[in-house]
Amino acid sequence: MANTTIAAPSGSARHTESTALQRFLQATEIDTRLLGMIAALLIIWLGFQISTGGLFGGLFLTPRNLWNLTVQAASVSVMATGMVLVIVTRNIDLSVGSILGFVGMIMAITQAKILPPLIGFDHPATWIIALAVGIALGTAIGAFQGLIVAFLNVPSFIVTLGGLLVWRAGAFLVISGATVAPMDTTFRMMGGGAEGSIGATASWIVGVIACLFIVASIINSRKQRKRFGFPLRPMWAEYFLSVVGCVTVLCAVWVLNSYYMPVNLAKKYAEAHNIPWPEGGLQIPLGIAIPVLMAVGIAIAMSFLTTRTRFGRYVFAIGGNPEAAELAGIKTRWVTVRIFALMGALCAIAAAISTARLNAATNAQGTLDELYTIAAAVIGGTSLAGGMGTIAGAVLGAIVMQSLQSGMVLLRVDTPLQSIVIGVVLVMAVWLDTVYRGRAK
Image (cartoon, rainbow, N blue to C red; front, side, top):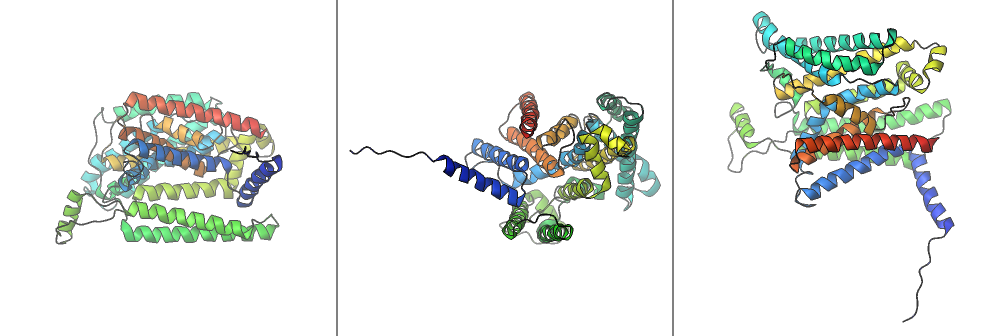
């Protein structure tokens, strides 16, 4: 038999391949850290899918589990968008879970105890008043903590650690440890479920609008670059980003529409709407849940705030070099107060989602949410050294955290072991961030 040899790729061939990849990433301007996170998320999903019954018979990548995953990740992703700004400015907020619990309890008392004697239960204005009270209270708490950090020069770690203890105790004291329920019917829609979803038709409409928004954003970005003489992406890169964005949105809508209302709820729905019950039953798609829409809307608004406003530029300037930012005329102290106030408002919105989902407010609500929120932001690429972070990365980080938790629940992993895994993942994320920043230098 003749001897055969296989030549190894030459250095020039390897250089060409690496250069081609670099050219692709440079042309599309895709964030490599974000791309790595997406790859890690897909690996996690496939790993849990195979572990729970095989690639085609697993329990993880089912419409039901993915629908529940998006709803469960909504409250943490809302808070993670604010945590990005806090960490970017070299601060930390350990009180977000306790603020969520305290504000959620106040909103529950407002609609279950205070308003019914005045305007009746399930009044059309109940959910508006309760939500407004919660957001105002959350903003005030955040601003108060921000004032202590900014003007009394107390480290944010200490201030918010105190807040973690104070607001958790406050949630217990205001109602003597009792659970408050039920919530207003309209308010409960913010928690998801059969009543808190928009259905298949509306979901497709939202998906199409999102696709139009993606295309319009890319077109507008190109016009702005051309207007100010900035380098333009190649046309093929613009088309590629548009197609990938639209396909991702429409696939997500298709998956969420593939989860149907449970049989007992479908029967109640049929009775309420005088629909005859067929032999095979009714298949009513739930579509996108309202808390998911809220989380996506807040993520878009926060992305705009951080990338297109003066306030956002100030935040990253302070994170990059606080002394230089102050010398440049930025009122760093008041920016810090506004960041913590915004964080408090986002905690209130997350509290509304959590309370509505539970249809009750409890003293344990929001426990350890500060861990998940900080982990989501850090895993999403926000540097603890300050000056670096993205809203999209934080949302992806929240999905990663919830995916780990959901997968371990499906595998029936004990709760203590779940905490160990999440703690290890957080430490690894910080280590990877340190390595990334070291190579960037």
